[in-house]
Image 1 (cartoon, rainbow, N blue to C red):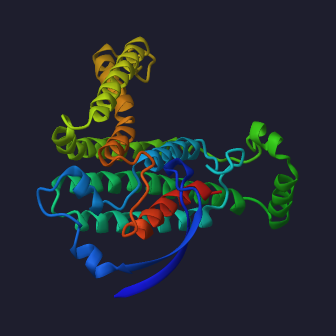
Image 2 (image 1 turned 90 degrees about the vertical axis):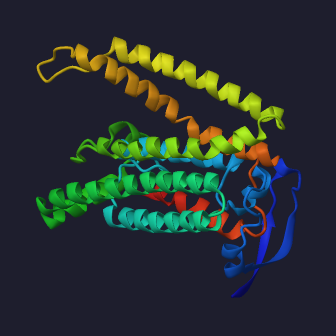
Length: 320
């Protein structure tokens, strides 16, 4: 199936191409999925041709936005407008579902295309778990909003509910940010952070995937060694500080007593989890250094799925 698709592409100024060009891209899906662009045992640079997901600077920006989405949702606020509380449960739920189905589908397709490379299969699984976690967290927040607002609306008379909506629209953005809509029983959204467990598991799988590629390129790319040393050093500092914090602020039991038996476990889990959040940045920058493209721009054959994934993963940011 050949689908000619005219595109206007503004190439990144970081890549030094800086002008808008009109190009025709012919996307043959059957050929794309059948031919990954390399044979088994190819170099990391050759294997990267099959990878149609963000990496490098674009991947870095994507991970920053993902983490921001997590923590803003956990506060019960809209990621794109953090001064607003989430109150459109149905709309938010639809965004979360569309984002989940889109990102999972694209990640699975990339994994199938990269089937000749175990490293990129594992990296694709890592992307699947990252996408799953942020999308399901947005669905979690949407469902929580629907429950809270549904119960509250049912307890109010129709005219009173309409007056409340008008009153909210009349509040200024600055005042809304600080008041936090104190007149609305929003409940707790902290359960959203529980889905970060999938990020930690995914990061372990991602490191298992990037490891062989790094070893294969270790002696040939000095910048990769520098990146790895910096990653190890920063991770060690974060783990040490997190472990120290866990020891100084150990968990307490329900009666308020310090649980010394759990203090060490808590400190270890806290330090390992904190360091784990650096893994996505390392993987994406390592891939960019290997291929010599720090921006992480896609090739013409991967462009459609690459940007489709990037846009689909940003949908949870528009929950409101």
